[in-house]
Length: 129
Image (cartoon, rainbow, N blue to C red):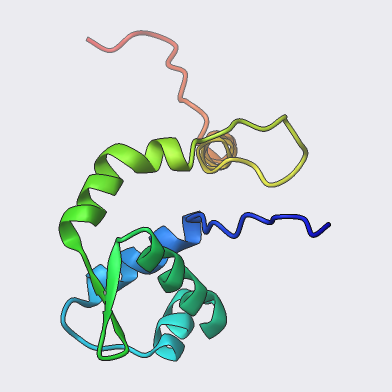
């Protein structure tokens, strides 16, 4: 007996990035290769993203070019993206410092270096009047 497989397409976060890039280009036509190069992806990934967005009715294809359905994309960005791509907190791991922490540590190090370069204060034997 052959098993039924669900071939339902689901959007991925990179699909949203491709759609926002298409919005930023406006009416300027771009090929999948140009989109891929500007996004740092392969052209097959961009094509698959557009195909999934087309299945989700966020774009339609006209003259072999994707055209954004702005109303649908706006509604998805405002109301659906936070549910489709929820933020999840991972466990603490060793790695690169978070930017804010790295900057504050760097500033503290620079301040301590400046303090060590400060000239000694003059001590007066009697106060000035």
